[in-house]
Image (cartoon, rainbow, N blue to C red; front, top):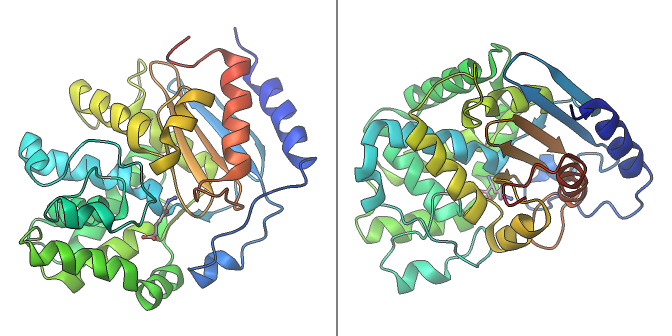
Length: 304
Ligand code: DON
């Protein structure tokens, strides 16, 4: 039996000693103020066991990790018809790139780049008001985590609204190609708020259990849908660093610009890691290093 706690203790010590912690996201002011010295990690099993190290009970902005939850809702709503709206290919571009949208008539490459995530939010909203969509999303995440104390940070959402001109450009470009069904500003409002969900590593690891398919894990979607979301996380979850994450970690993962990463070990466990400093591709620097150490120590890579 893998001694998960001693692996986490070792990772926690190594991360504490690491000097280069990356750079916290600058373009959303409340994220720019987060202390980069923090590091937390949690591993949840479907039988209720939970292991953690460091700042695993500190709330952080999950940002793009929320795209996994919204995708789950959009697929639940539309089924396979969803794929007429959004592709499922890696983009090889930065998370907020607008380049491919023009080449591909406003149809985003995948649900995890910002353009694709905005289109996914639009699909999940399905003509409901942003507040109704957000209430459903928060309920879904709480049900997955088995924890009612999960909320949206209104100040972060407000700040994204104020600084979100690039996302606005992506959304209006897609709207010009008739890719959105709800009013653009409503879709953006919903998207900014979903990204502002605030969770701890412990909550996030528990919420990810639904994607493991481990015996006894919450069953909030069909096995086929879970398998496909894992495939997308592996291929697109880290944008133009998805290949690097697959190479180093070998597990499906979804990063957020708040420094969190949700990682799924199919059939085994759900892992959440957080450290606010980012690498050049906008993914958590220490989070990626910790995930790599963890995968090596456990041998849990899906390729092993
Ligand atoms: O739309 C944005 O720019 C942010 N709300 C989310 C970006 C993000 O988390 C990218 N992931 N690493």
